[in-house]
Length: 197
Ligand SMILES: [Zn+2]
Image 1 (tube, rainbow, N blue to C red):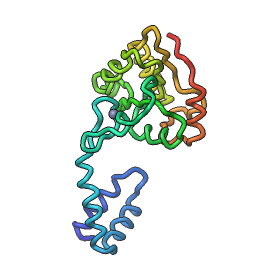
Image 2: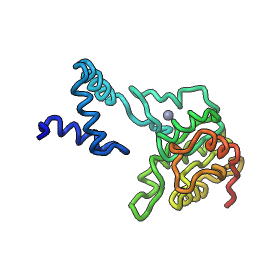
Image 3: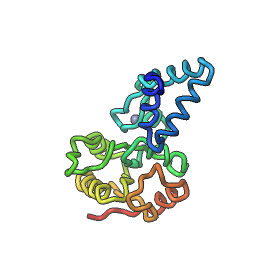
Image 4: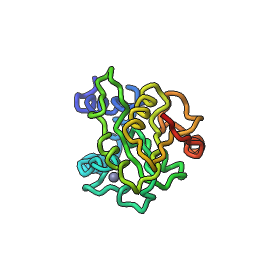
């Protein structure tokens, strides 16, 4: 009943998290009913994603090779380690952190074949070995894999003069930073504790 061209658009929309078939249909029909200029704007926005990459230093998004985090005037003595690029957005929204970030791109999970070489870990070890870094805050997820990742990183980063801390309590178990409200994130940051191994 639905023409193939529209159906394929519905299928694309339905791939997004939280978007079911019915919502996808609404989006597709809304776009069809909208002025043609809006389709052009959507196509333009999608095409400009081609300028987006990942920073080889911190693992956050770059545009045309420029990283807004590494270029910014942020405190170079503190590194906050998160799993996902969206975690950076969540912590920035909370507005309580002024140091540098490092995005791992996930957490260790040997059962799923996610070994240290599959994550952005070597770059982190290189950064953490820089003497100007005084503290590394591990904000990997409050899950078995997130904890295992934090333990692995601690074991490889330890050196005199470097404080390694873990996000404080209050983070929902298994929950990701991006789904945590700003107040809880601020408390977790303030309540961070040194990791002793
Ligand atoms: Zn960067």
